[in-house]
Length: 610
Image (cartoon, rainbow, N blue to C red; front, side):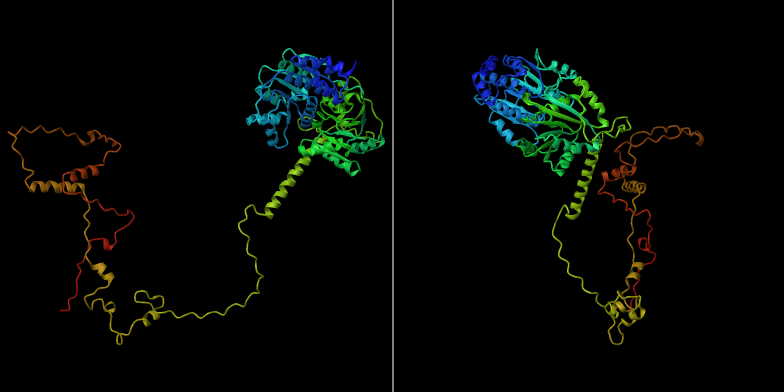
């Protein structure tokens, strides 16, 4: 069967067939042969196949053919969601190669880089969009991306995307898509715990399984080395030298571990670099480029690189730390043995990782062969546990300590920088001149003689100075203010205050004022009785009760805003009078009247010289 006959029998159009031939595809794989016809018909597809068997072509060809057959709006018509940036870039490159003969446009968006170039690309119009969940939701929230015209939705690596770390983002993306669409899920593993969730999102899907679920590639040679944790790096260097490894991908448990292994390999003469989530996208792409170009012998990565890395002719994969999820082991070793080529996967296992090795062997349904080496396991101590009974992983504990040290170092550097350079600089202080030697103490100054002051302001603390300041009566004419107080018409101020008459303050008394008004009215004839006829008999006198039997007089509380008795009396007096009675002058309660505020007891007298 020739190439054109094989792919042509699947119903693929001529432009795509020519592009696949140029890309190097000769015969379709099992997953491609089963998934492409169903995808072209518009059916929902659930595909499960081993890593490296061509799943990207299995959903990429149906997307390109369906969009090229029918015209649609200039908007995103097909969306492919992936878990990692590397896988998104790889899928976009493959789609561009498959559809180079079609008038369709592709684009890829992911986080870790600036969004401005990606937004400009979307504004020009995109038919097929490959994206990671974070950046996709971010652009949708900013109203920079519209997914209402999507016709085909593909979820690649569904087992990773639908686990507890990505299920919420997946549900948010699905809520933004139209209900009527074609959905295709592809993954290397489909654990039973997520199959129910997948079935609820697909409608009458065509289930395609090119191999048993979670089965590794048979062509990969698998081995495990039982070694202590401290000897793993030495054993790795020994195997790289013994087998003359051309390129190797090493997986670690933590980001800190990846950096540490890369540094240790570099110190021992092995060219290595690390890629993980803390690295920028530019640094990760540069390290991956150097590794593919042969400039690096070893690429150390975390599980983020276990999905989506497509490295041709990768000879070895090393599991420096075993993964806690057995299915992740399948993805790791699947980076080698691509497209039917052979490969080697070697795992390192210390005593604390023995339970993880048993889980992997239970998934594989066979034991992993042991490899003999020069660093056999010698430490058989049970792993430590925390207060809640959980096993404390040494690599995780080391990563946490390193993170605390980095944070403490950043804080110390920040404090040192703030102490060296203040946050707010106003002006530079003037340069200080060198200190001069201390001068001799000055001689004590003589106290100046007090100058005489005008009369009334002399310093009475010095009586002799006061007397000397008085003018001589024989030489200077006597001023009136220096005469004897009784010798003339002028009296000193203090005596005048004492002897002078003071004004009389008339204090206001409402009762006396009313009585005065009544007497004034009688005097002017206003109080004469008018003739109103015969006088009536006087009423009988009321019975006066003894004091002990008088009822208690009830005093009603004053109403709010009602005037007081004094105010009512003042109003009655001033209502018809000529003017208002002046208020009673108030004095401080704690102050007593002095002699000047009382009525004068003496009349002022003046000495008459005549």
